[in-house]
Image: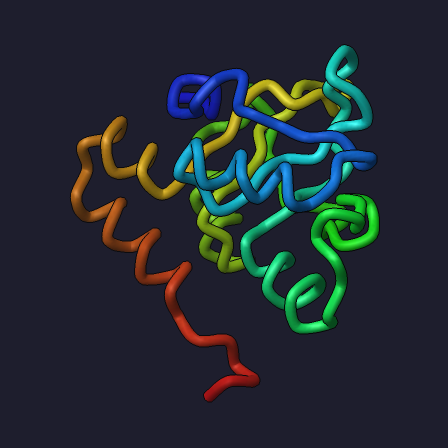
Length: 146
């Protein structure tokens, strides 16, 4: 199975000029904790990710106004990605290795085509041992936190 067989296709996304309050509301409405950031809605070229942690650490903790702060100023750059044609185990390994709960899926040109989340692994693979291993790897405390 390839990543395209496991991913959620055409995920919701935002652009760098969006203000974070609008993206946070979108996260709430969609019940998600991160949103891919694309260059524009036509090309869908992936630039980064905006996570709920980015909002907490780079907006709230720094006292920024979420109604005036642009996504470009607080997004995480160079996200871990996988190709739609990659074998899905590569994505799972990357999720565990980088301790991320979601991984954007791109095509050969770097355009966002989907996203793989922990929930996708649990519901689409129906392999409890694989799901457990991924969740364990993602949840492992970082070496610096031990």
